[in-house]
Image 1 (tube, rainbow, N blue to C red):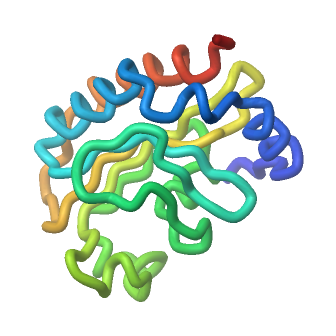
Image 2 (image 1 turned 90 degrees about the horizontal axis):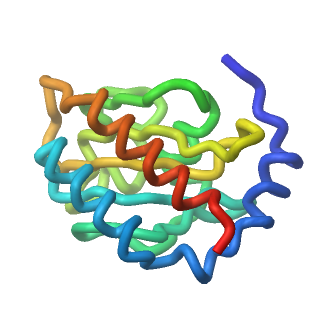
Image 3 (image 1 turned 45 degrees about the vertical axis):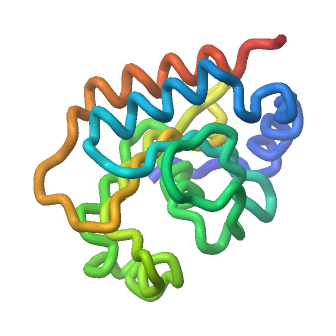
Length: 158
């Protein structure tokens, strides 16, 4: 596992102009396309800061922010070069007791692709979520292409 320098990563997050990125139409279209590709009710683009995960674009029933300690995306960004796939969160020891898994509606399926800046710091993730387990993967190539597109928008100055 690649160790992420959290201080430097947080500095990179702090440099983002989050108000201008939140609900950006281009990012919104990416979140919607991701959900379509994965055939999930939820597609989102998140930013993970010191204490929270913020959704800056989303489709489907997902909170605008959640505590970092409960965030699936906070786990995904720990391995910035890898896609995190959770076929059934209820069976995954990292998430089985998470209130988003044990609650209603539950998170069962999750795919998160870390979004990194030009220096390689993971800022958040493009993710898709379902309330049912998935035993077939969505097209990870197409989702990764969307993640790279989101990175270009996300990290470009306005």
